[in-house]
Amino acid sequence: MKHAVVTGGNRGIGAAIVQALQGAGFRTTVMSRSSGVDVTDAAAVADAFAALDAPVDVLVNNAGIAPSTPFSRMDEEHWHDTFAVNVHGAFYCTRAVLPALAKRGGGRVINIASTAGLKGYGYVAAYVASKHALVGLTRALAAEYAASDVTINAICPGFAETDLLRASLDNIIDKTGRDEAQARAALASSNPQGRFIEPEEVAAAVLWLVSDAARSVTGQCISISGGETT
Ligand SMILES: NC(=O)c1ccc[n+]([C@@H]2O[C@H](COP(=O)([O-])OP(=O)(O)OC[C@H]3O[C@@H](n4cnc5c(N)ncnc54)[C@H](OP(=O)(O)O)[C@@H]3O)[C@@H](O)[C@H]2O)c1
Image (cartoon, rainbow, N blue to C red; front, side, top):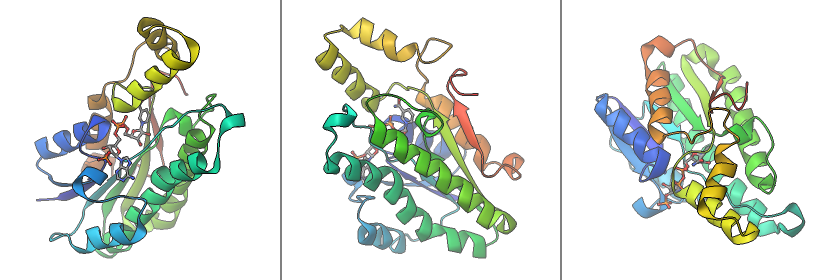
C-alpha cells in the first residue's frame, strides 16, 4: 500500500485530498497543528517524518494561511508568518522526503499553491509572494530531480469553499460594509466561470498526478480556476 503524507489534511482542500487518496487505496498520514505537527517548526517536522513507520511515496504540501491587509499596514509578523507556513513549511517537509524518494527510484511531491502563485491580487501581498515562491520551489526541484523519476508539481486553485475562504469573506464584509452575497459575488467574479472551486476538484488533480499516467508531468503549475489564469 502506497503511503501519502498530506499537510493540513484535516479540513478544507487537504481533507478532500486525503479522502480521495484513501479512496484510491493509499495509506495517509495527516500533519497539521491539530495532529501535533506545526510545519513552521523545522525540528518538529524532522521528528514527525523520522517517526513514520512506513516510507513515504507521496507528499502533498497543502498547509497554508492567507492573511490579508493593505500593504501599508502589513507588519513583519504578517509577512514572516505567511512565509513560515506557505514556503518554509513546504521546504522542511520536502527536504524530509525528497532524497529518500529519489534513492528509492520515484515518487511524487505536490504543492498546493494558488492562482496567487501565478498572478497578483490586492491586499494579500505576503500570500501572493509566498505562493510565487512555492511555484518557484516546484520548478527548481522538478529540474533538479527529473532524472530520478520523482515528479514535483504545483496545483493552483482559484477561490475554493473552505475555512480559508470564509476568513476572506468575513474580512471583506468587515472592511467594506458589503453583505455576504456581495462579498461572495466579488470573490467569485475573479473566476470566469463565476463560481468557487470545490475542494474535490483539487483532489481529482492530485489523484491524476500520483497516477502512473502522469509520470512525465513534472515542474507544472496546474491552474484549477475556471480559466482565471491561462
Ligand atoms: N480556499 C481557497 O480559496 C484556496 C485557493 C487557492 C489555494 N488554496 C491553498 O490550499 C491550501 C489549503 O487551503 P484551505 O482553503 O483548505 O484552508 P483551510 O481550510 O484554512 O485549511 C488550512 C489547513 O492548513 C493547516 N495549517 C495551517 N497552519 C499550519 C501549520 N503552521 N502547521 C501545520 N498545518 C497548518 C490547517 O490545520 P491546523 O489548523 O490543524 O494546523 C488546515 O488543515 C492552502 O495552501 C491554501 O493557500 C486555497
